[in-house]
Length: 244
Ligand code: HEC
Image 1 (cartoon, rainbow, N blue to C red):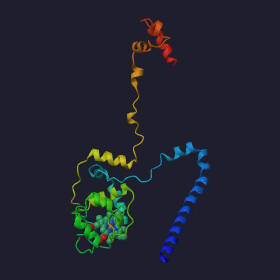
Image 2 (tube, helix red, strand yellow):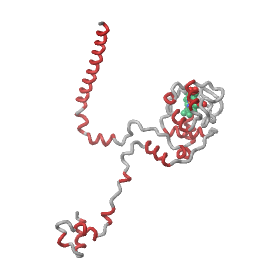
Image 3 (tube, rainbow, N blue to C red):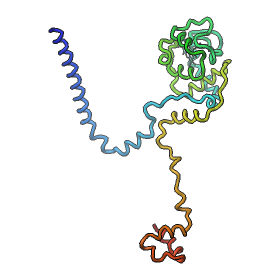
Image 4 (cartoon, rainbow, N blue to C red):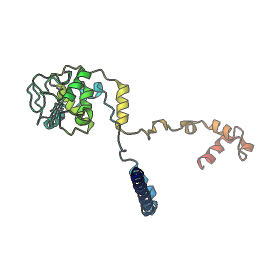
């Protein structure tokens, strides 16, 4: 019996909260409704070209981006890593990163890896470009429980450049051949949803380039042109057309 009462109280509280939220929503709608109407057109124009909510982070085509990546920019970014990592075999707060590309995760001698990193190494034979790209974007999200307490590099180009720098540290990974199809896909994703691609909107040159004779034939069906549609009518048809 008292259980029922308790349940009723809770249910009542939940219901009341829901009602309050619904009520607030309606108040908010009413308060804010009239404002945007005044300059709706401008508002839409201003918002559309902005970057959308979340661009999909499709990994780049490594064969395309690595040969042209900015290694010295990557070395500059490595300053953020070097508070924990040395670009040598020496361990610090983090494991030495000499030769990390192509190395098995959690395998550098003398470093006490987290069990999360060891698990990751059990599933992935080597640090390839893509795994490093994902990991350094948000280490804690990519490998929950990792000891690498680093917020991550949000910008794709920062990650590409720092990977290009890591590649100079005795990487054992070959740079793959460029794959134009994959590169196009990644570029498209980076540019956001491909809504306004005007390439297909080709002009129709048939009208402008069409010979006069064709026009006079086509217009023969129109009532006011029909009577004069002999060979001599062709020249006079041209001016009437330009005035249109
Ligand atoms: C706050 C210190 C810290 C910073 C900054 C940091 N790392 Fe780490 N990193 C670590 C630690 C600690 C580990 C070991 C993680 C584990 O065992 O879970 C690690 C592991 C790694 C690994 C895996 C190495 C292996 O042997 O498996 C890579 C790759 C790596 N870091 C790259 C980077 C890069 C690139 C940067 C800079 C963009 C960076 N780290 C910044 C502390 C850091």
